Length: 568
Image 1 (cartoon, rainbow, N blue to C red):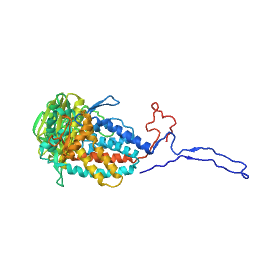
Image 2 (cartoon, rainbow, N blue to C red):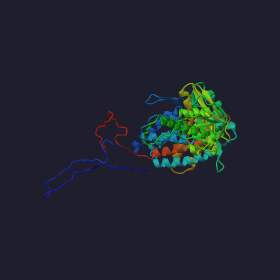
Image 3 (cartoon, helix red, strand yellow):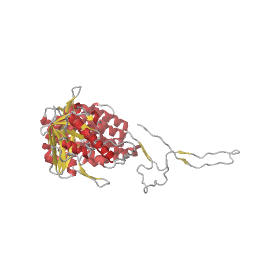
């Protein structure tokens, strides 16, 4: 444990005797301040209790959103923007957390989201429960380093047990992959249409799966493009095997359907190049003005002829296109879109094989990309360009529709969770059952393991096992069931060897989760337990918090410093 010792030194009385003790001088009790005035400091158990209380508050904030019966949160920022969600990481990202220990739990959720894409609420709840159990042990005079060591041992054992209880899943097993996606969406707003979205998600992920040099399957989720359109119902959402560019043709006379498209991608302005320095042109004769304008026109015409000469009939330009150039392109029957986002240009390059060209002079036939169809379609009030029928494409687009912007945003969050879990299931090839079944199995096996470990660490391992049971307990609470009865029944069935027995929140009974197809990737549990353990151990090992004045200190009017604070 790292201890910070900053002590307040006090000068005691110094007795000086003059002439055989005739006179005594006292200097008084003047304190020498080591820390800056106003600095707040918590030491020992106070620091531990405060940190753990702050972290548990974060866990409690998202606890009611766990599971299919979980509730949503409405988050309103300072600008009045509203987010309605039950996605753990979204909730924690949006709320303004000040306490440093609480921020560590927010980091747990962010790590879980980055690694797996789902299970953020689970990871935070486990971390909160580990800290709750730890504080009980600290009260019983178990040293924090002993608890930390026990938690580390329990985590290592839990990872082994997770592998033992997992089952195989294959990239070709569409049914299992769809059920994994449905499990991720069962607690979301899209629950009523989860079969529809699960099918869409599995098709999207399987399209972008690639085999790496080491023979392992990988899926780069950046190859899934999301386009959102307000209007229609959520089941009007559809998958397009290609790229959707939210741009329309720059000229009304341009073709709206191009078959056997030959595409060029230009990262340069389709305009007359302006000088980078201030310049002035003096024209003294009317014929010079005509020649100047004619040369500008010829420069634009040569750009268009360069595109036509290599056989291209579709242009996506990242910069602007001059009005006159638009006219020339339309006359040649060439489709063009301008100010296309760099992200879309990169996706088009990857999926069509086109090279991104920075200079018109360097445009060659080898830079052309191919697509079966480029078509302009109207979506509600917007026109969009669909680039489809791509050879061996590794890019897909999902156009999300919904009644309101808030609904569309929540659909997007749900789909991101779903395709993230399908991706990791394909990459790892392993899955576990949900409904709290894996958590109870872990708890049972960890208690058996604790008995075999000598020393006080077994107390911490036993506490770790109990903390795992917070998942079925919370699922039961959120479903309006008695958590004690549910937990007793689950323990009973797991003791009888039914390792997939979990809570069905809809029926209120403990059932076989494998038969109900309530399954999730192995990596969700692995990462959640790892992150929760790391955060709990880190918070637990802190016994001194020194907060400088200003972190949380009230501020004065704009432009003023709080009183008694200098420029240091």
